[in-house]
Length: 257
Image (tube, rainbow, N blue to C red; front, side, top):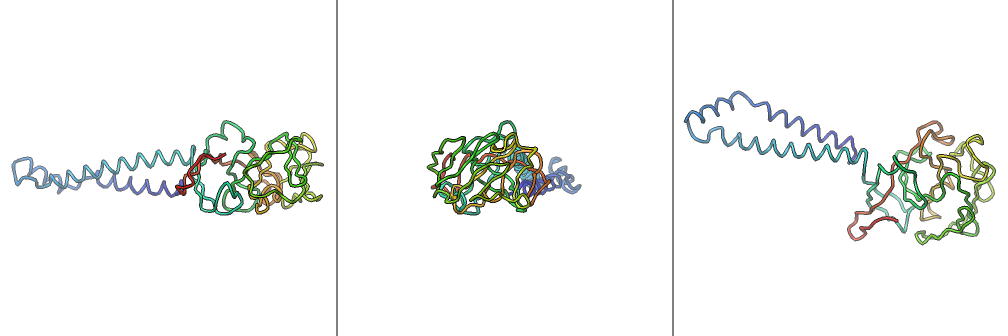
């Protein structure tokens, strides 16, 4: 359920609560008769049921407001629609994503992060952080090197067969630079060095390396600012959050690493 859908449900409960609070006059007269010694129980039962319903509605509204706050600012669920993160994440897995963490700290190496990609896509992507600002990155002979050190990656399905290197103010795949018309590649002025990931930029990869549309296709993800180039040039860039817990299906419940 999205925050907007949850808000709509809360509004329905609130309207019902208000409607029950505004008591019709006939109910008031019935209660007066019962209090004055008339027929016992007339009006008392409806009033008791009304009180119980109002109490439940109050509880639902409070719980809904708490849930709305949590999914808007702290944690939300994320559904896995593709196999790009296999074997770590399977299609139909449901995760919890910490939306607060990246508000106070930056993404870390190997984090599984959720973010809007620099593509005209309606949904967020989920990939692993492979390189962050200031890092050098190279993929050679199916091995990923970050700052000259080969990464130990037990989480991947298979090694990438393409060659890749960040150099000359760009991302080069099999010797060819990604086109800024199609990929998010900052201009030279945004780079601190021609062979290091620029500020606010992150290189993201799926664990299913040969079946993942990731930074080797569409360039850098960004934590802040607007996308430098590509399909969403000039649009707001951000990270949604850190995926930390897999809670569905039950046989796959675990903390994510």
